[in-house]
Length: 263
Ligand SMILES: N[C@@H](CCC(=O)N[C@@H](CS)C(=O)NCC(=O)O)C(=O)O
Image (cartoon, rainbow, N blue to C red):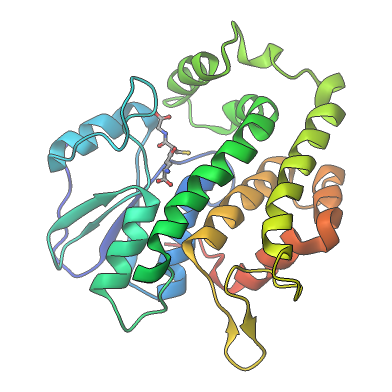
């Protein structure tokens, strides 16, 4: 797939489409979508199906985002026509945009970068084993047909199962939700260790508003995914809203001004 170079200074944001309204759904790409909205940078989305991600990397001469056969080539990615650079991986994109656009709100100041890399690993290690069995199968029918075989093959490998649909039948939902709640409780404790009721890592105040870091956007991406898959009006989502003093709903509420998927 040939990379499309734009004539103007509009950043191209590569995202994976779904059949949900507005198409955007991925917890990983939402980190960058939130960020572009937060920074107020001009961008437009280019939708890429899973089987086409590898070709996109090759068209820019980018190495795989991570080693291994599964999930080596991942989105989000951006192409910045001003610097003629393509950057993949949300944590690198956050650092790049902070460095290149210093007048926009920073989410990855240099003194936080090592912490954020550590957080990413701790967060994924805590949440993924809990969320994957329930949400990977449920995402499948909401992907476009072009991406479904890739999702099935890679996620069945990831979960070590013969058939994605057999991993978590509905009678197991309550048990798996309890696992997710427990995992998010671990994350809540990290934030609660400050003892001032903060919703984001750097807190914020009434005057300046909340301060967001890449870590907050990472948590928000996954909470948002739960809301998108279950549905805003669902009983499942209502339950999540009540977890841990309502902090996950509060986080999405703080980010509501940046919940824009129109571009
Ligand atoms: N740490 C990475 C994770 C990116 C990631 O896992 N992206 C998924 C989208 S949800 C992907 O592109 N997977 C490629 C595949 O499944 O082949 C980031 O935040 O950029």
